[in-house]
Image 1 (tube, rainbow, N blue to C red):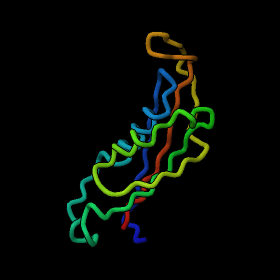
Image 2: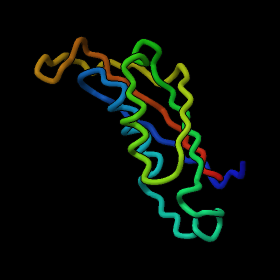
Image 3: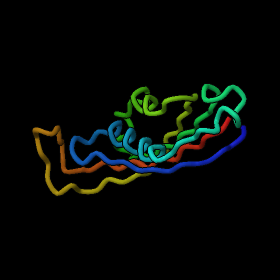
Image 4: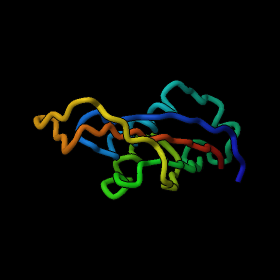
Length: 118
């Protein structure tokens, strides 16, 4: 594989303890400030042949609820492969709000690294 660049981001869900929401935000954060106009010249087959290796560091107790199909939709092109590892953070939000789906006052923080290549 040819690595072009690595992007990092983080995201959190302050209420609801939703690891998917936090992971989507982390992935968006990793890629949202980039434009790659030269991909068609650099990658044989262009955007459709990009390979994305995505590492998500998620607090262990919130990994089971992760919806990788929803997270994959963040990436507008290329083929995504995901690796999940223990990590991220659980931090107190200071308040549990029933109407926001809180089970407790945990904030779920997810870290993300996206390696882009072909």
